[in-house]
Length: 229
Ligand code: 5RP
Image 1 (spheres, rainbow, N blue to C red):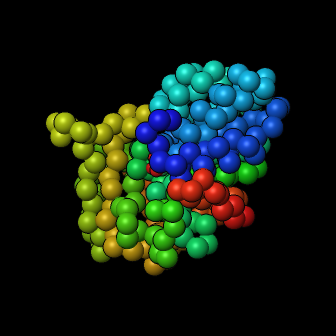
Image 2: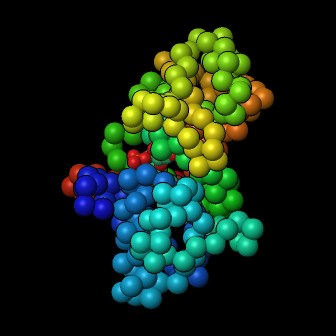
Image 3: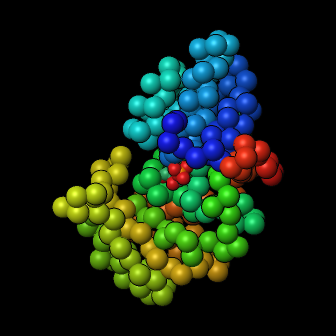
């Protein structure tokens, strides 16, 4: 990926190095994972790497096709060996905020189906507490906008319906739904918030990923990678 930073390239290449022939993979969404998909494409072409992947978005599907990565679905492959994906924030306990690319619902399904969920980041992503640098993305059924906005306000936050680049309508997710970004000014108890959001009708899923990450690969600008498990 020519425009990705050296740190993202380093994380992506290190992630691709974890992959062995015969593996079933989850293919995440975003610029860091795109580096991993490119590296996997190179290994397929040069070394005959034999893998099959489940994409987490239409964007990931397009990218996988560009790199000749064979695709399948979770109907045909119930368990994945390894899922590779990025994150917007990672706290010291490996809890994540995801969904800046509006793909978190499928990303969570794929991460949950994987034996190992490898998160690829650069040094801008680690945080002491989730929810300061990025809002929490919440995918909703459009008619539930009012109730979800009121819930976020009750929680002390500020809801913002995510708009498209042209500002002429909401961003539409791959599921045909809307994204509300919850500005929470810090998430002191991610597990409690996870339960509250999971209990709210009209929310399909949200970007809190708890107890899912097994490995964090943090690429650095000098090309080195820190691997924490
Ligand atoms: C998409 C995501 C991405 O993985 C996350 O936004 C990180 O993206 P990038 O690697 O481009 O920084 O959750 O829904």
